[in-house]
Length: 271
Image 1 (cartoon, rainbow, N blue to C red):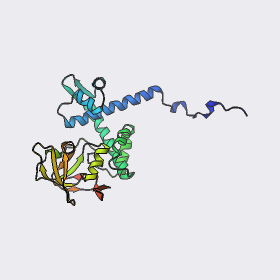
Image 2 (image 1 turned 90 degrees about the vertical axis):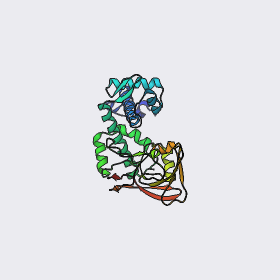
Image 3 (image 1 turned 135 degrees about the vertical axis):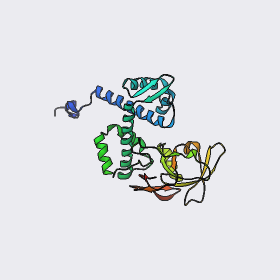
Image 4 (image 1 turned 30 degrees about the vertical axis):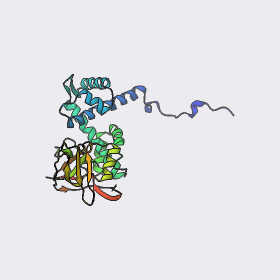
């Protein structure tokens, strides 16, 4: 029997379907540009001035790498970067960021509400998938899900809407608040919040606050014991005063203190 040509075992893929080195490099550059742009947008929501150091820490890269990318973003007119005076997104950079955030949060809704993936374990996957969705596909996902207003963590699908929330860290003892959204979407962080019951639409009463605000003690409905959280947690939880929520679109099941609970993931807030 004649020996089989090794080439015969290779996949027969038309040349036009094969990604070239240039295509792969361009894709990687595009994703990096998008990640940086979206990251700068998120930083702008928290900081009055975004510096190179802030960008490098957020992106977990060296200051030199962040500086090189900021220069590229400036060349693409996505940011305005003045050395020693910070970086700001341009109108084009802002539009790109809003589009990425919309796709990201719609993907999270799809993963949690339709595919029933864990509430606390979809952020990183959505970070990857958001770069591969066109606006048309995002529109179809949005329509199929019934036009959700927030992602499962409470963050608005349309990030340009006015933010009426405030950090839990800014609240005072005696206040009653409703958890609106979670800004830190790390898996371990969300898992911790789910475990102690600090999820969107949960009402909480602030029982006490340490003199310098480092520790806030909360009372949640249905729980006998109080919950104490530090500044890292309270700074990443955004709340609103008790107001009426309407049109809940979906419910996600979870576990709080080993008890089965349900909470609405896509509330629309009305004044």
